[in-house]
Amino acid sequence: MKKFMLAVGLLSLAGTAFAGGKPCEELKAEIAAKLDAKGVSGYSLDIVDKGAAAGGKIVGKCEAGAKVIVYKK
Image (tube, rainbow, N blue to C red; front, side):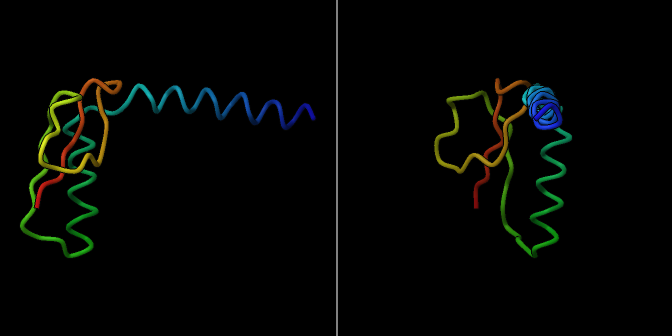
């Protein structure tokens, strides 16, 4: 039981670290690399303020959720 509680505690700490988020440009580069590896072309990734993602699909959050990365084809 103690090991389980320790694991839950560590995972919650890790979750808050990831919630802080990566820099937007770094996350955008990672997403672009994954799309390119799958052979996707003719797309754009834009970094916008949260709530301003009209006309695209949100594919990532950065800067502690203040900004989002929007995919448009």
